[in-house]
Every structure is written in structure tokens, then in C-alpha cells.
Length: 234
Image 1: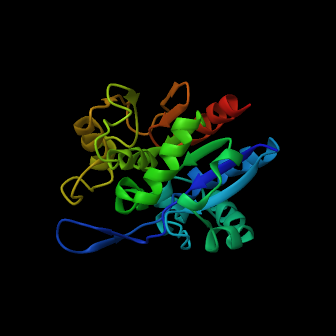
Image 2 (image 1 turned 120 degrees about the vertical axis):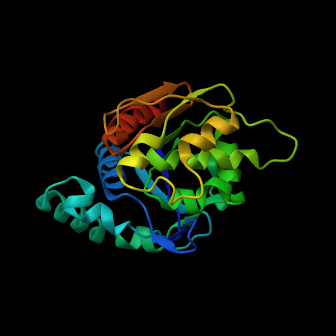
């Protein structure tokens, strides 16, 4: 059976430049749709976090106004997450996974990746093992921040230097009012790390695919990323 790891953060607070914390977690739409798609294609889904701690949902992703979804769709997402509460409350520890039994890694967004996944040793270990084994990695929105963790191994160049990548754009940060409040932005960090960052118009679907790597820009890109990952693991 195909096994796909969904890598989530276990933090619910993102520090801002003014010293306050912004509530954060995973973005529901980017988790539920792909998870359902993976399961519908017969894959086993394994949830992991860097430390094995529970993965919180970003509450804003279940509110129609902030999620840009209908109340019925938000309620559907919330109900689905309730059905899978055990997996989210008791995930695997990322660097303890047996990567020889993993066929793909998917990292969704929400703001929690900016707080934890970008510089965590366990994330670097998991992604480095996946990359070296040829296991495809897929990220969407702020989940692309997890790729920055691979700066950590001493003496090694970032493996995605010069690669065309995407993730939540500065224009999108500006549209949600977080420009100047975040201590760093994903677009700026990817450019600074050496990526060939590319984006489309805010909130439009945008997916970039390479052998072994798929990145998507925003929530609208999550299903395209999931389908591309399935294509690579199949």
C-alpha cells in the first residue's frame, strides 16, 4: 500500500515583530482535501509533527470570511477533522519515521510552518532522508517553509538553490494585512536561500513540479499539488 506522510507543525503561536503571538496551525482546506484524495486513491496517510505533539488547526481556516469558503464547506471541514481527531492529536514523530516505508511527503500550510517547520532538526532529518531516497516531497502555501530546514546540515549547500519554487507570496501577505507584522516572509526567505521563486496572481492556482518535488502557492493550489504528488508516487 502507498504510504504518504502529512507533515504538520505542533505549535499554535507565531511570534510577531511587536512581541505578540498570532494564533496559528494548519490550514484546514489544505489538509482535508488532499488527505481525502490520498485516501480515495488507496493510500495510507500518516500524520507526523516534529516532536510528536498534537497538530492544531488554524481557527481562521474554519471561518467563512477568513477562509473564503461557505459556512457549509467550513462545517464540512470541521466535521472531517473531528472524525480524524485521533491522528491529529497523536501524530508520529517526524525523525523517527521509517522512511523506507514512505512513498511521499506532503506539507500543507497555515502559519504554523513559519513558526516551527522552517528550522527544526527533525524536519530537516525527515526531508533529507526523503530527498536522498528519491521519495517525492510536496508542499503548498506556507508549508514550503519546511524546505528551508535543509539549510541546517553543516557544510552542505541548500539542495534547492536555483530551483523554481513557489509558496505564499508577499502580495498575498499584503492582502491579508500581515506585511510588516511578520518577522520574515516565505517569499523573501526562499529568494534569500537561493530559490528561483515564482508566483502567479494572488489567490490563483499555481503549481510547480519537478521530479521529486512539487510546490504550490496558496490554498487554491492544494489539490493540484496533491494530484501531482500522487502522480509521482504512482
